[in-house]
View 1 (cartoon, rainbow, N blue to C red):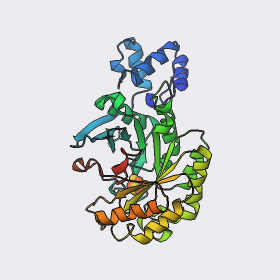
View 2: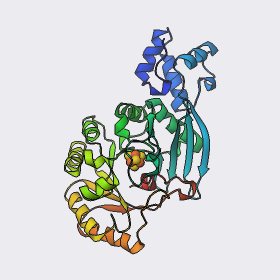
View 3: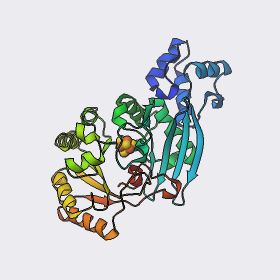
View 4: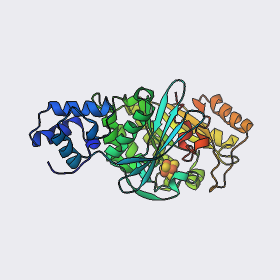
Amino acid sequence: MHQSADILSLSRDEFSARLAAIGEKSYRAVQIIEWIYERQACSFEEMSSLPRSLRDRLAAEVPFPQLTERGRKVSSDGTVKFLFELADGQMIETVFIPTEKRSALCISSQAGCKFGCGFCASGLGGWKRNLSAGEIVAQVLRARRAVAPEKVTHIVFMGVGEPFDNYDNVLKAARLLNAADGGNIAARRITISTCGLVPGIKRLAEEGLQIELSVSLHAPNDRLRSQLMPVNKKYPLRELMPACRAYAKETNRQVTFEYILIKDLTCTPAAAAELAALMRGWLSKVNLIPYNPVAEFPYATPAREAVFAFRQELERWGVICTLRSPRGRDVGAACGQLRLGAGKRD
Ligand code: SF4
């Protein structure tokens, strides 16, 4: 057995094949996967029912991805922000966001991000590298172990990074988390959030999975959107919106659009009318997020009256929308903006 992928990047069939190659019986794969997903083992060392020689060999050849917890902050609203260091020193964030009805775990897909959205602190440091599927799955397993497995009901790819810029590893992780003998989380409870990479949306529509798609829209026209999100120059609304409508049609799933309300910029009556025109008449929903001030950016939070007026205007046009309150502000869990509403979507 030659060293390659970490254990958490492997499906059950792939892992069984690895074990068979070194003469191990197939029941060992079942046993080990049960240790990982049922008994929350985060190392082979903990798998006391395995012979010592097998544990040592597996640790050398298909090691667990290294996630060293470097910080944990618990907010007064129950939000927990984990800071993990990867084997090469890169740092990632994972945020648990509990609410009455559901509790989402917001996970990262890349170390850093290359898309530089003009309101997002996560993109400030630039892109470092993609996470492996195992490093993505490991965030879920570590957080589940910390907060109790049954508490994590939903997974949202809304942490640091653009999931479709790391498409293969993100999809592999989503399948592993969805597998009945893996993470056992229904596809409908897994959300992939994109800044609008059209090729990724088209690919996901063809996967045959009912994963929730969430799109960071944040502006109702190309002029404003290109100002806030450079990615819009490459994939403008005339390409993005048809791809989203096709996704809803193909999967029969409602597409959610994240929309940050910025004072005098995206939160105006004219913007509400433009946004309504994009949303009307198909399986879509808008998640309104009042801007959360970040020192590095020049934007301001709109007044409550302006926020309510914006929502009323959308509703007047029959657009389904929700207004989210910030979560975890006191532990800095809201720096990426998108995480604000991650735990409260219906
Ligand atoms: S909002 Fe998402 S895509 Fe944009 S810079 Fe932040 S992490 Fe990257």
